[in-house]
Length: 344
Image (cartoon, rainbow, N blue to C red):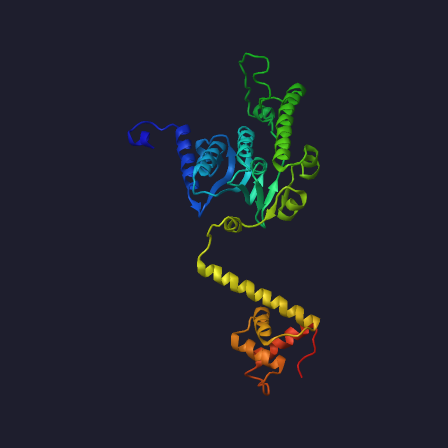
């Protein structure tokens, strides 16, 4: 942006690069000792102005960010935060190869599918030390395609006839103003096949498997959800981005949020334990019953205590219909679900 400040013209390629550099600086923000590199939107070797402004990511930017993170002594792990439908072939193989050369060291490189890693994005992800997919995430689309539009009929209807003046026998082959010849189609197909074969080979190398297993079990262009990705060997574990960051020691949520989640988890465990013991007819302590019924029925502390006294017949006195309504209703539901005899 210095050039702009000094009155020089900032060309589109420079503008795109400045946007891409800004995205790399975003990457510098880390969560604790974990560097997070965003891999968002359409991927390309370099960003043009429109792609950069619309949220795409360049392979060159990802590489620079990765080198920067690995060079930072405070960083203990790197997470590629991926949410991308894929992108262009040029540059993908080079970035994936670079990641494979850098993985396996003291600083693990984790590909976090959050929540889509399709096509070129999966190519990149497959080169990391580990692929983690968020529970609602999808990945795959191992395939390559291109397209040819024949607009000759449309041009003819509008009275337009285009003439190419060229040198070189094949210079204008595949242009959109005429049908594609068999020879041209075969040439283009060869290029698609080459890219596909390299894609499959790179995934096989990255995932530590064979080309045959990738072709047979990785979908040949299909996208799969988290569970299927694990079953097919296309990912290593299911976890959210926060869970991945926390696994490497990062703090991702306020202390109060952690306490609430921990309390809810404890209530859930207590509820499961109570239901299992009641169904099995095992002895239950007053504390186990109180904690369990609070988790199962959402009772207040006093309601849970009263329900425990009624159930365990521990100095409960005669039940009061109005005062003990919530406790008695909860007991009826609990005992019905546990198929235990109702209190008498």
